[in-house]
Image 1 (tube, rainbow, N blue to C red):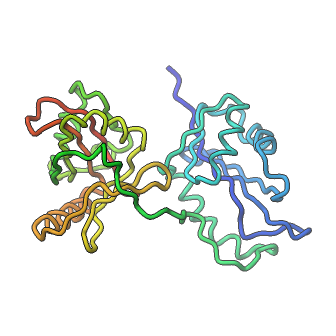
Image 2: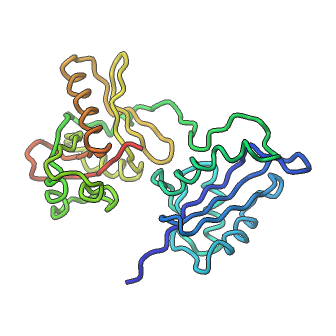
Image 3: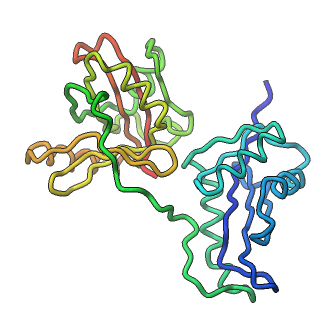
Length: 279
């Protein structure tokens, strides 16, 4: 079976203007190793899917199977171009190669003659305030937990879990974590809503689950490209201490953590398991 060809792409306005004073949009396309890198500039008046289709056909000899996109403002145009070319477009925050390239290019614009002088951050996306989970999905209980990296690798892959999301890139071994490192996580006991909650989470596309100190403290799920959901709030000092330990463990596990949804604490049936990583 041939390996899938995956590109990562960004198409959005930059702090640049053309000779006519029009804002310029920049298309960046790379593969996962940045062996392929492609750059094209487009005046704002010409920004459309047709222009993108033409450019994508010049990136490399072989078209990709998938184009990954992290910026919401780029998604609809690249998706439209992908449909015309028969390419799957995947919305994901995990575009590490592209983000590294964008970081490197950030200082480049300032040296260009057509730089507008405006402050510009290529990677920061505007995120809405977190929204409470729909009430019908609330689980009955939840708790912090931890598993060894070895258990994460072995315990869930062989189990008949309806929704299992363990991307190879997030496996502890792939991240270079020792087998005895504790991987922190959150377990939600969903009761009768367990499967419904798991299906909703899968559709939401979880990225990371973070402790946010406040009044009250809370757990916020980062999902999709910019979505944020309040999973739980709490004022109990003991729970807050556990939450701080959870965040400390995340630092030791290179940001890797997990979310497990199950009906109850019998550990017989599981509804969904996700490996997550703070981006």
